[in-house]
Image 1 (cartoon, helix red, strand yellow):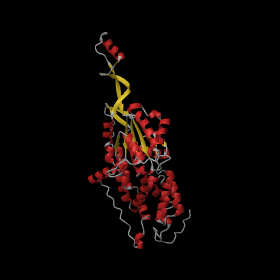
Image 2 (cartoon, one colour):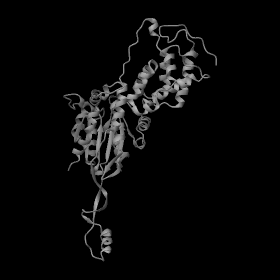
Image 3 (cartoon, helix red, strand yellow):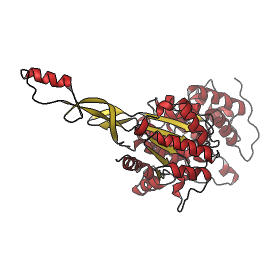
Image 4 (tube, rainbow, N blue to C red):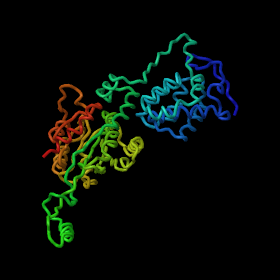
Length: 418
């Protein structure tokens, strides 16, 4: 492969008098692939899905555009390594930190995923990337802004993140909080199931066990054995708004629901939770296939592929009608608690929404509205859709930060009390 001559130096050049091969290396030397691999691993640890195919495509892109200008390198890598809109801010922050100071990027990753980064350590290729892509603005008399970062989180940092609004966080803070919400416990209350088991109390007699006990005592019935209903975790039906105004809240709540509602401990046993999760915007999307995945990151990636109306409008009434037509099995009578995650900015007809909410209310136990707009003091559901939803919901709870998510278990427990 023949190297092309470096273009004349300009204000945006990284190294105006250095050949391209000396910056990142060419395909034959292996430097280009190793350096891009190090950056790809950093992006994966930051939550951006990057595979070997994208790294190979990034190598081809850099060979096409060259590495003489920092803006060209950033644009080419972003075009081939970022496949989701929500990952652009993370990529840009990681690019700025990684190619200015790899140690700073390592601290950033340590705050996001302390255990993984501590085991892996910084790649050896990073010093070459730092030397290759160091900004040359100082040669032109310009001063680059300092990017300060403290990897050690103090108690005040933790408190601030717990009370900070998801929609007002930086990219690094938002990535960290997405990991924090996965550790929030949601001890769901238990309800009486339809299946029975032998026990000391119950309205029906367990004749089989009673006769076996009598056979051991010579045919004398010493006590009547009873059948009592098994306890099971509360069934959940979650409807998550994925419209444009709910982008960050939807992603965070999906990660939280996936991790917190997988299993629950009942009487010393770990039981699976019956949960049905749907995304709604202008149409209804069943997220059951995605929620069957064990890894939360894989679930979010699969959910992104399933949802076709992401960041669009909201028509909750039409989506509830679709739920009734195609997924009536999710409505299991008076045991299910419905969680509706939305800001109430519905664009459908209020009469249709009221009718569908009334039908949903008759066939479920409780409806809990999780509304991120409650972060504003003096909020009132004055919009047409919000007013209808407020009248149908049994309770409304804010879910705009980590602290509010921790209160969700108590709210659900209070709703299902007799």
